[in-house]
Image 1 (cartoon, rainbow, N blue to C red):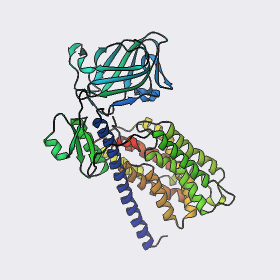
Image 2 (image 1 turned 120 degrees about the horizontal axis):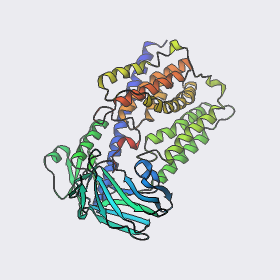
Image 3 (image 1 turned 60 degrees about the vertical axis):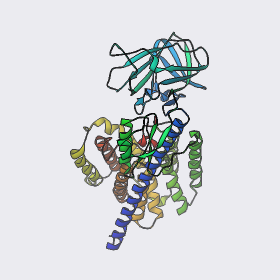
Image 4 (image 1 turned 180 degrees about the vertical axis):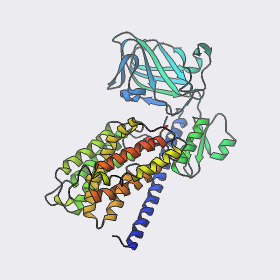
Length: 486
């Protein structure tokens, strides 16, 4: 039994760590919003726009495939479309509505093209009827084609129409014979005249007065991370072209660095850390701590934004494979001092790890926006198993062996678990709370499956609570939590 003083110390440390995690999540969110805003400010400043698509892999398009009579193939110099005879639609990923009257010039860059008929398809809202307009045929060979969307003859609802004000969906429709092949490098929307960013203005002032002919630069007031994202989205609902920056962020041009360099450095750092922690005959405390950190380090890097911002990619997949592979390899050579673990516990002991689930269930009954489904639970179960295996079986047992007392090990594991959910502040705090409870129970009972089931149930319930306007926006982590990049 802990003394009252130790209990007070543990509770104080938990509150301090929760506060620091909340501050970290808010700081990372502000940094992410600033990075997005400065990139958009830099694009407007040189006469471009945030709406551009570099096409290299099928996943760069909606659904990762071509709709209709064709298929997508990754090419050395772009994304190849191979026709099977007929029309193909290519859906461009639109994270937020496009203000077409600000950026009516569509640019198509081809590495290889044929003189094929093309058309543009637009939906103002995802639920609205599509508008379509025929464009001039594509150019022969490599080159660039410009299409002024405002000059096309649009048909909406079967009637002649002008260019829609906004686009929530944008597709290219191309018709080609069987065996035809074209390679698209890049698609971009640009203004016809230079739209310079205006001076930064506060959110309240921007709502009252907007300067025509200039791209507004809106400064958000300080606040909770989910509130910052809510206010950013509210600005974009009024003016999707607006540049949104956190308070005290000075607009300045930012250089684009190839993402693969940062990702490759992250992979190299993980491998180096894993090599330093590689097991020896008699590993000391330092080696066990290095092993624990090396196992979760790849997952934390994903949460901090390594990998693709919009979807799972090769880099994030490599990081997950590194973490799991390292845990399995080192786990097979675990020193005897770690103690055994098991899958199951007696049924009468399952109620303790299920307590957080009961609390979340009560929260869902009060604030739930979706119904609970078995499918969501089954989809989340493998991810819960991976997380808890890495955290409890691999990391917690090592930290518990190294650190004096049970409380420091529980606090350390819960903190690492929360960091793996950055920068989603609300989710970080939930993960910290759940990590405290589940790590304590596992180190007492050494049974994994009850925690995995509890984690999967908690994830399914939280998914039913998430709302873009609520305290828990989503269960996304990393750059995906920020969303709406273009």
